[in-house]
Length: 109
Figure 1 (cartoon, rainbow, N blue to C red):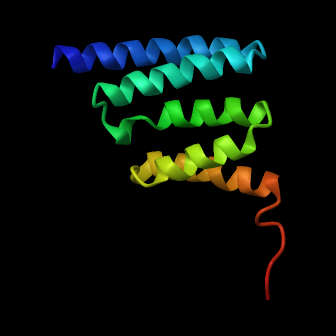
Figure 2 (spheres, rainbow, N blue to C red):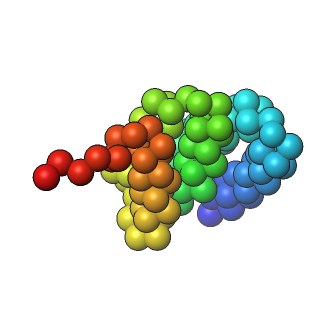
């Protein structure tokens, strides 16, 4: 249980650090922090349901750098493991990205 607490605390610290970098416009550095935090989270068996903030932050960094395909893949892969509000939050980011990429701009009827 102490290990789980330490993992959550380290992840929260990474999120705060990444948010500061994002606020300063350093998306590449924030991307690296969030990728590392997500890798650490997953390698330590962090609950997939709780990785939503990492996914959303990382996705936004990728989008800001116009790495749209990487963001798309990240969102798609993560949606398979999420439920509830976390799913809704990631799905909203996914839909916004699709709209931005022009995927759902035309109706077929």
